Length: 390
Image (cartoon, rainbow, N blue to C red):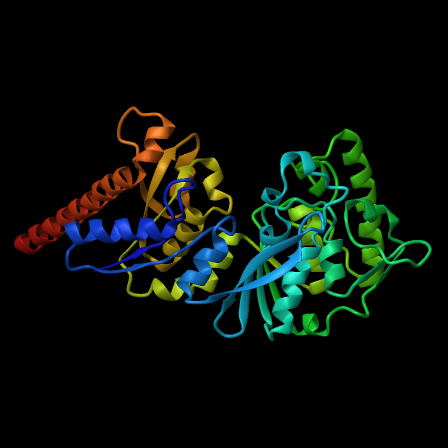
């Protein structure tokens, strides 16, 4: 029997790696002869780079880049085998880098993210995966593209730096100086939102308030973004503003598609592809996945649903351990998850659940694997009875 562990982290309590260790311990008790493999996985959000680099035995590259307000920050990105890299934009342009009182999407820039991409290109990397969650920016990706050599010019021909307030000032875009290696590179973007660039569901109105924008700022940014989109279409010959995910990361999704021909993919799917998950399913009998909270949103790009769908296609049973089950969690069963159990086994508050997370997870895994063993024994007994009747 072969069992594969592929659980997302439980935010604030258990990492993907610790969960794999706990599952290994419990499996040895319930199925002592089973072959096991634990994968470090994530859904494209926080922890993705760490999971992928760790699982693929990669390394980290440090770089001093521009932060969201042009301050110097020391960021890292992952170097993977076969001249590949994984970059988290939050390392350079993330909201957590700014205290709340300094958040201002008119001023913030994605320039530092572009510097990370440029650094990877200049190291010979030609396959780059970019996770674009958690941004502090609403610059349409102007900053990142500026760092890669695209020139955004105002009405006097002066070069714009690339921040939110520059969106409405762009009069011309010169792509002739785009870093030459960018044209030879495959870009894959991990993106778990489907918002277009513009409108009420777009980058500005959906995500701007959490980045510090008030009503007046939102109106100014949206007007600028519309203008920027038009000028970019003229320069690139492509209208990417309506594409799913164009509004991600303050419009960085839009820029990566328009200027770098990037492919946007759900983060969980991109991670599973990087780890060759489908190949690992060959010869596997059971997969154990999970996340901290399972609800109706779990079918929208979260890791357990991505794992479940792939297991379903491969004919492999998938089960889940989750911190809690909330309204609509039953939808996960349609995605290929056969059963789900919670770690919380009695009345307790969140603080206690987090404090006891390892103990509770271990108990839940034991209950789940014991149920699997029971099912196997029932199946085997049924087979024996059939043979006896024959």
